[in-house]
Length: 70
Image (tube, rainbow, N blue to C red; front, side, top):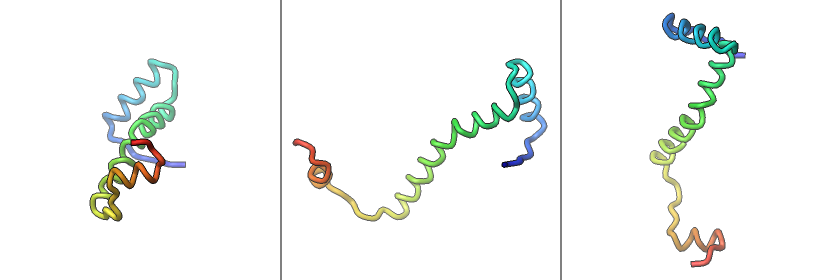
């Protein structure tokens, strides 16, 4: 379980949306989190790889590794 405090204006918008659609505030909070979670994970993975690049592969090495025809 996660409990968060929202600014009053966001809480109001969330409550109005829930009332208009018959869904819960929890439903919309979860949807908003899920919608942006993939994007945030990708962003931080990219930042980590930029800071810690590790091994670099050439196109030929990737094609060989993946058994792709050239």
